[in-house]
Length: 183
Image 1: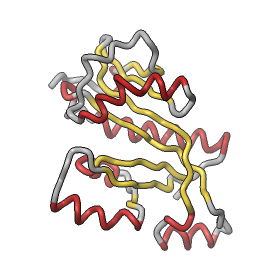
Image 2: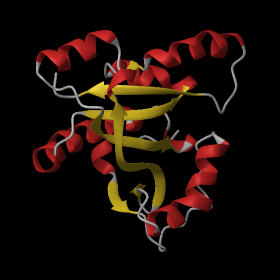
Image 3: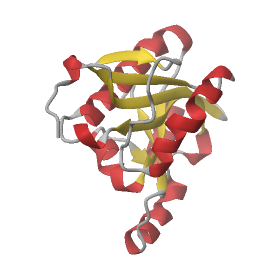
Image 4: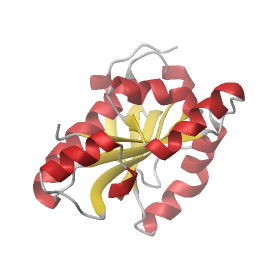
């Protein structure tokens, strides 16, 4: 493991100058997305990928896009709180953290938690300009702990997956979660 801090990183929007082939986070789906899909999806305005580098080495990347939450899919506590505030829309705006991956070489440096904190801070700032209340993520089950730490909740309809995943874990299993960052 290479020791660095989050402040050592340079964060840039993905472009053709980034050398992507050497990136390996240990999850094939995340590696493949960066190398095979990120540019294409950005050029089609589906999302934006940011690259975190240290001395030109790719340490991590994350991808954001707009999203919405179907109101009836929230847990009963969150639904009640929004209804009490007279927020009873069919869809509620959100920022989606589509992908977040840290290179194996840099695991253990708190880069993942710092990127979640960056996402929350940017969502709060962006919500002043466009209106948004939630952050959503389809977290890899093995990384669910990271989002739990920031009080993300599992969508109620996803809770059955937890039992299944615990019995038969696989690398590609995801669980949909959300955070109301205005609480």
